[in-house]
Image (cartoon, rainbow, N blue to C red; front, side, top):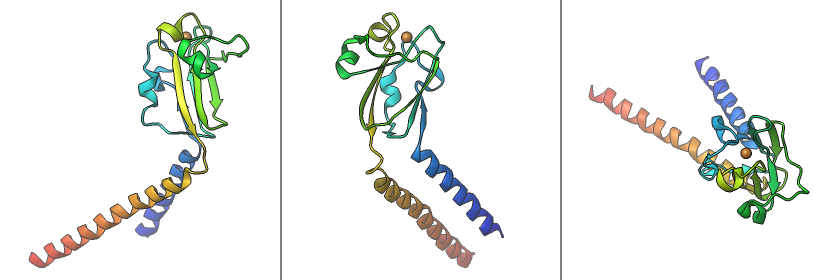
Length: 161
Ligand SMILES: [Cu+2]
C-alpha cells in the first residue's frame, strides 16, 4: 500500500518535471522584473533556453518597453525604427527559433546607461532530450545505489547488534 502510494508520488513528480522541462516560462529578472540596473548577464547564467520556452517581461507600462533587436543594435543600443516595441508591461515572448536573441528597452538611455539589455541563446529541442534522459536516468541510479548501500550497512549493523 505504502509502496504504491510512493510510486504514485514518484510518477507525479516525474510528470511535473517532464512538463516543466518541455516548456519553461522564465520571468526576466525574476522578482525584480524588467528594470533599471539589473544584471541580466548574471540572470541568464546557468539557464538553458529551448525553443518553445517563454520569456516574461514584467514592468510598469510606459516606464519601459521591450524591443527585439539584432546583435549590432544590442551592442550599440541603436533602436531600429522598424521594430515594434512590446509595451503591455506583461509581455510574453515565445522563443520560436534557435539561436541568439537580443532584447533591449527602447525608453530613454535605459539600454545604454542602465543595463536594460538581455541576450540569450536558444537551443533547438531536438538534441536536448537525449542528454536530459541520460542525466535523468543516472540521477535515478545514484539514489538506488545509496539505498542498497544503506540497506547493506543496515543489515550488517543488525548482525553486529
Ligand atoms: Cu527601460
